[in-house]
Every structure is written in structure tokens, then in C-alpha cells.
Image 1 (tube, rainbow, N blue to C red):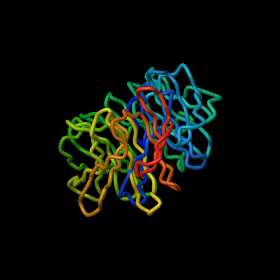
Image 2 (cartoon, helix red, strand yellow; image 1 turned 90 degrees about the vertical axis):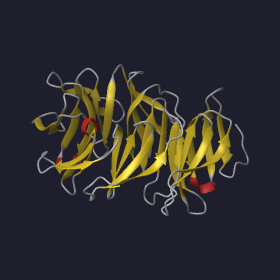
Image 3 (cartoon, one colour; image 1 turned 180 degrees about the vertical axis):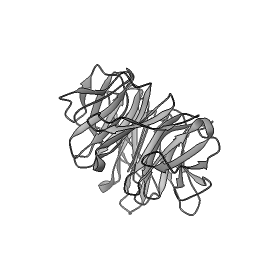
Image 4 (cartoon, rainbow, N blue to C red; image 1 turned 90 degrees about the horizontal axis):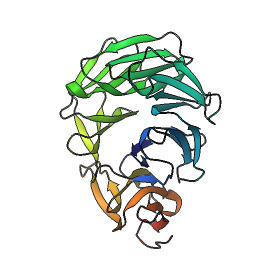
Length: 323
């Protein structure tokens, strides 16, 4: 699955056979979400909210929402599910971690950092990687020791992703309109030019990198990591910015879909492999929604009405709408 965040709203999509839909997650304690990660074992999504100064978690349907850590200024976060740890970069130029229940909070790296941004983990090898707006990419052991500078850049490597199995890391250099691939030490790099690159978030799934891009219009694009020239396709065109939520699931007919909540309602995104990418189908109209969750077993959608705070539900065929 892929998870999307925009200010107050969370969404997700199923990428195993990405023909489809995004679903919103109706959470309450969200004002400026800057980082998200997912625990597939317990099926919780975790997010960092820099404005509210908290790290929280919730089920994908928005239930059991819990504030885990307060009085922090998180920028990005990453989970080590096996060791039950949360790692995050902080606006106060630190990298910190805690247990996934919020206990045993500690600072791992402090004064040497310069505006740390995206953080990703290589848990099999016990290491973490992060970007800085200096700009550079650094690496350290998960306990904060053995810090190494891997990449210095003339651009701004704000977002990155790892493929430890293939020994490659990827980052988006928005300043120079490049997606860059290198080995895990930052060597043997390869640049793929991408026009109009303004990256917000990056995720790696299978042979594709999925990139949230803000240049002129908000959209999610993907490209094959084996491509030498950065050939890409738009997977989702976002009708408004900021959008309010995104999620995905498989319908009762076996169709993979993405649901998007936005100012005009809830829309189903049909990502057709035959080329009709980003086609939008209105499901709920004339309601300003802030989040959406899709229950695949009965094709039911749950969402929040932004105007009055009601949590509502409707079937995917637009019947049975209720609070």
C-alpha cells in the first residue's frame, strides 16, 4: 500500500495491482502532517504533526486514535516494527526515537545536523539514512553511532527511498530536476532527468518509484527504476490542493480502487492500465469531506463532513448514506 498525507488529512492506496482507488483515514488530531509510516502487523498508521507538536497513531478506519508523543517538532518519521521503535527527524536539528507506544524517548543525534528532513531505515543492516537541506545525505547506525556523510548535492535532496535487497538508494533532487540512484554508500550514482520536478514525498514499490509532485498541479507520478531517461506516467491527478485524504482497497467485484476526499466530495480514481490514467468518478457530491476510509468487504465508504464534523458512511454505489 501507499500512504499519502496533506496537512490535516491521510489517505492510502493498494499498489499490489494498482488499477484503482484511494481511501481517506478520518483522524482528528492532525493540523500539519509532515511524515507518515505504517505498521502492517498491527494495521496502524503513524504520523508526525509539526504544528501540533505530536506523533500519533490510528487504525486505518480512523478508530483508536492515540497521541503517543507530545512537545516535539517532528519533520519526518520511520518505523522499525520488528524492534517496536519510532525514529523521527525534528525541526530542532535532532534525530530522536522512542518505543512505538511513545515511551523511552531519547535523542540520538544532535548538534551536527543542519535542517534534517526525510528519514528512512535499513533495518536488516541496522542503519538509518536521512536528508538535510544543507544539502546532503547522511547515514548512521540505528543507535546514532558511526555517522557518515554519503552525498553532497548542488540541489535539494528532500525525499528519498531505499532498496536494501538490491543495494540501491534513490532520492529526488528538485533543484536540478533529477531522480538519482546510487549504491548504499552514495557511490556509482545514476541520474534520471525528470521535467518539472517539485517532490513532496517518495515511496518505492516493486519496480516503481511513486512520487508526490507539486509542480503547477498536484499529482502522483510513477516511473520504472530501470528506466534510463526518467520516463514516467501520471497515476493520480489531484483535483484540488491541498487534497484532504486518499485511500485504497479492493471492491467486492475484485477491482482495485483509490478514493480521494476533497472539497467537492469523494471521488473514485480509476487508474486504467489501458491508458485512462487518473479518471475520476464522483461518489459523494456537494459535501466537503476531510478524510475517507474504504471497507472492502461490503463496498462501504466512511468519511468526515468537514463543515459539521459528522462521520458519515455510504455504499460505493452512493446508496445508504447515513451518519
